[in-house]
Amino acid sequence: MLSRVDVTPIDAIRRWSVSLAGALPRGGSLSDISWRRRHRSILYLLWAHVPVIIFYGAAVKGLSFGHSVLEASLVALFSLAASLPNPKKNERSVMATLGLVSCSAILTHMSGGLIEMHFHFFVMVVVVSLYQSWVPFLVALGYVVVHHGLFGWLDPSSVFNHPAALANPWKWAVVHGFFILGESVACLVAWRLNEDALEGERSARGALERANV
Image (cartoon, rainbow, N blue to C red; front, side):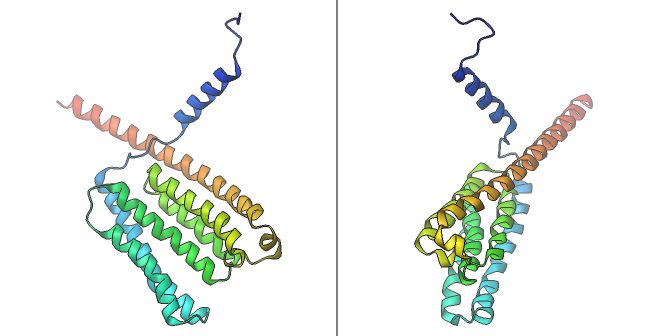
């Protein structure tokens, strides 16, 4: 029979899970006004990638104009879907998220797997975290994993440009994923702190309003 101080592995895992869940952001804390402002800024960034991709493909990398336009059209479709009026914020933010990470994948592909172009993924993950919502954030992370793993396996030269990664794309997909995970932790910490600050501000405003009644 276990004493009060005995803790089973299952109990330890349960307590750890509860602590972790309590430390993670809750999501959905942005007001409608704040969400619309952030979404509008993200849309500006997303639409701006359309001419950039065409220019980079046709003028910098020497690809045909038609090929470059075809690549950019995918981003334009996601941009259009994210721009259409829709009361469901998650749907619009997911469309914008898919557009942003598709920009990263397309530019990486056009560059021939240039390692420095992978930095674009890192920037886009930070941009997506501005939504402070789990759905688009997890979509972005899932896209990065699939792109680096699956496409790195099917066509390594479109994702990586150094011999070690070309010979073992899954290994280097894990390496890149490790750094994306590290960045994600930093984003989650900033996100949670922002939620706590917003909650404290709302509580203080509510207390002030009640005191003035």
